[in-house]
Image 1 (cartoon, rainbow, N blue to C red):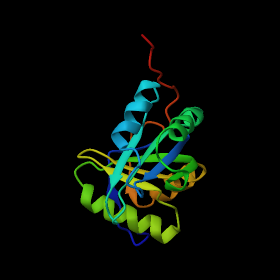
Image 2: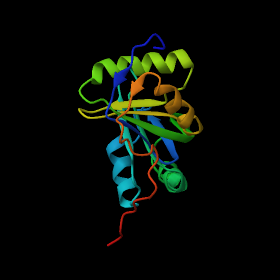
Image 3: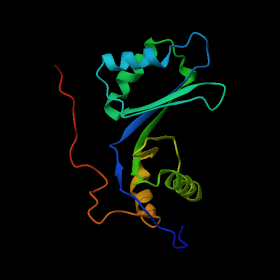
Length: 172
């Protein structure tokens, strides 16, 4: 990648500091993810990232919430039928969102190679037609972005990686 190959992308954005929760369905009596999401919605907890995986024989779901919501999520998990050994919580993660600008498969491969080569952790990953969202350690976001700019070219008018404001949902 330092060999001169630079790919244009539409941009990079960082999330605020988040907590990633992963639940695995190891026991037949475990709650379904749908029940868990319903309980989270009832508490007006915003989920900024959601991913389901069936790569192994044990289905898993992971989601991210703001750090301030962790206690509420832990209460929900304690009162649901998910067993504690089937829940993993990673504090202080950040979502790095890339806007591939019509190069999604090429960029996804370059991104995975980049993270592996530099030893940056990938806690979870999701893609859509317009974005690649990757969760990693929050403290590493600035270092990752600095190194990514040697691989990906950003638009001249690119906005800051972090947004200067925080959106909140109004209670009705």
